[in-house]
Structures are given as C-alpha cells and as structure tokens.
Length: 575
Image 1 (spheres, rainbow, N blue to C red):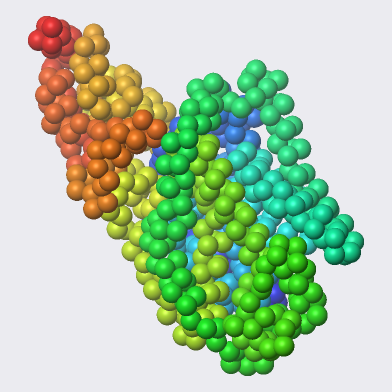
Image 2 (cartoon, rainbow, N blue to C red):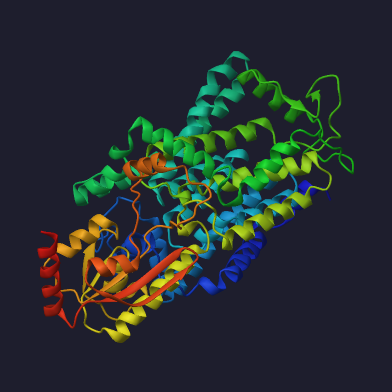
C-alpha cells in the first residue's frame, strides 16, 4: 500500500479519537482551572446567558456582536452534563481534536504522506499557542477548526464542505470571514486568465469555487441583522468597535502591528526553529524516494496539466529539484513538494490574515492567527522530508523547542495565554483570593479587571459567593494616584501584574518603542506591590511571585472608617 493510500485509508474517526485522547491527556492537570481573562470577561458569561435563558445576545456582559455558535455549543455540553470548568475544558478539547483532524486531512491531501501528516499534527498540537488554546473557551479555536476543514475541502474540490465549514467558522467568530473572501478574490482573479487558455471547464470550476467561498457571508449577514434588531448596534457596543476598528486605522499603528504579526507567524514561541530549518533545507537539492514513486508523486497527466495551467495563469515557472516539470528532464523520482496551487492557497490564507489582523483588532493576540500555524508547520515538515533524508531529526528538534516554549517564557513581552503561563496566573489569583475570603470576609476589595469579575462572579470558579469590589482600570501610577484621592470605603486590595513585564528583557527596543506600545497597544507599567501599599497607606499582608507574574493582598486600617481617614490624610498631603 502506498503512503498516500495508507494516509487516506486511516478512518478520520480514528484520527479524531486519537487526537482528542492525546489533547485530553496532555491537558489533564489544567482541566479544573477556573476561567481566565477573556473567558471570564466575555465567552463564559455569554454562553451562560444562553444556557440560562436561551438569549443569543449576552446580557450579563456587554455584547461584542460575536456570533453565537460557541455559546450554543458550550450550553449543550452544560445541559448534558453540568455547568463546571472541567466540562467546558473537555468540550474545548473536542474542538481541538477536530482541528487537529483537519490538519491531518490537509497534510494527506497536499502531500499524500501519512508520515508528514503525523509529524504536522504532532507539532501543531504541542506548539505553545495552539496547546494553550486547546482547553480555553475562546471562539478562536472554533474558528480555526472550521477554517482548516474548509481549506481541506477546498483542496479536495468538495464545495459543499467548503460552504458548511467556512459558514461554521464565521458563525464562531466573525473575523474568520477573511479567509474565504481572500480565497474568493484569488480564485476570481484566475477566472479570466483561465478563459484565455480555452479551458472552459477550469473557468466554470473557479466560478463555482468563488460562489462557495462567498456563501459564508450570508449567515454572517443574517447574524448581524439579528444583532442589530435586538441591540440597535451592528458590530457590537461602540466602545468595542472603537477599540478594535476605528482606533486602529493609523498608518504607523498598522505598520507596527504588521511587524508584530509577521513575527507571530515566523518566530514566536520558538516557531523560528522549524522556520529557520526549513529555509536552510531549501538550500539543499531534493532527495530521491527510497521506493518507486507513488501515484501522488509520479508525472501523471492530470497533475502535470494542473501545474502547467497554474504556471500559465500566474506566469510562474514550476521547478522540482532542478528540472522543469513537464520538460525534458525526469524529476518523478524526487520527493515531491506541495503542489504550487495548494501552496498558493496557504500563502493567500496566511497573508490575508496577517494583513487583516494588522489593520483591525485592538489587541495583538496570537490566538487570532490560530489557523495559520498548522499551515506554516506543514510547509516546514514537507520541506524537511523533501530536502533531507533524515528529516525526522528536524521534527524532533522542533518538537523539543515547542515543549520548552510551553514552560520557558520568551525574552520579550507576550500574552500569558500563549503558553502555560496562563495557568500560573490563574493559580496565583486563586491563592490570593483564598487569602481574602479566609482572612478578610465581608471586606470591599479594590482591584482591576479581571479581578473584579473573579471576585463578583462565583460561576467563574474563584469564590463561592460574591465579594464586593471597587474597580480601577489597572495598577499604573495614574490609576493608583486616582484611587488614593477617592473617598472610598474599601478595606482590602487585590493587586497583580496585568501584563507579563519582567524587569530584564533581552529584546527591549528602548523607550521609543515603549512609547509606541503605550500609544497604540494599551501598554502600561504596573507599580510594585510595596509602592502601591505606600501610596494607599496600606499594608501588604500576603504576596507571591512566579516566573515574572506577581499578586499581592493588602489591608487598609481597621475598617471602612479608618480607610476614609487615611484617604483624607493622603489627599491633604497631595494638596
């Protein structure tokens, strides 16, 4: 049996079961963690609102106009089992398994090699960004699974699957629409060129593909119409729209974001290891197969015809191991590259998403690019195999780099949700909140988001009953000075690092770069706990620091009256 037939002969349900089991086992210690950051701030409240009332529009949090499919999916799991973080995280592991199965299918379709597919699935599953997102209740994992399956069906020319999967992707997160629309433009561009060659069948196929790729806009438009009728806003509340769209359309900000996004898909979280290895391998000639060529790798007429058509349509020369395909030199015994038209789909998808999320999106979160990492890794792995006989060594090296990236933080600022640092943050917050509940019951707590939600919403998993809070934006000097002048009655404070910002950064681009980050990307510096306590006339009663993240609990006076007196004294000193 050929490698291609072996890859296709493995039932997808077997791949899915194996992927889910592996993801679930790897995430075992994380399954009971409370909800974190945007989970707590939007996705879990939105899903819980649907679970409790059937409302597709969240009412316990501001609506961001995100489509409702993740909320519906999680509510079904809670209905069948019960509302708990462990149920949510197992449900997300299922989605991660579906996404990895799509990666397998993409690799088999484009390379015909089960070994390449297995290596790509392995690297995708342990890549720190994908691994961390595999049990977090964010819409991006849903969108990635739908997008990857849509790409697989597109390359197999199964257009019904293209429509269904991309529609599910955009009903999970609206930004997923960028991929099918970009590919529709790409396919549409090829239509008149194909017509010049006289290949009418190719033109009709392209038109059908364009229609299938544009079709997901219809359910997305329907959702936005429904949201507008219910809320009066099409794209979410004005604050959300301003932060993610209108406030991002500055040329300097777009260029800076583009630089960040390029780094995210080439270097971030040790991704540079397989990417650099791929570039080095491209300097080597392609190696010959150890056995006679498979049906996916011989010079059969249909493949040659498609390659010639692609070269004519875009004026590309397709070269394989130093010999022109279809020319006088036989390169059929060389290990095959991914067909150029398949590569083009990958490159269009990557470029469109990188540019799109450089223009829109207030936060430079790497999870927005989740569908791109498997594509980059597939290109890397197939290049390893094509150019190097002992290619599995580079796969092992990349895997080791990714495992290290799960535990070792990079020497620059990053979001804790990009690796297992998010679990460190959750456990620190759990420990601090336990101190407040045990030793300061009934106290009003000064804190910032997400601490405000963690203390006031028991459903998030940090408290059993709501704790009264007073909210500030963050723990920067400006916000602490503001808190010091407020006639507040808070008797305690929960302060923590709101960003990963260790004091010694290897890649620190200086004060000018920090000014850009402050102006365009909401950067600020949190004051250390000791200084916050002195400014607020309080006392640090508990604190802990792990791997650059810290949290502290403070007490103020003997109660509300003492706190108000302390604030008044502070105000007089400031005057």
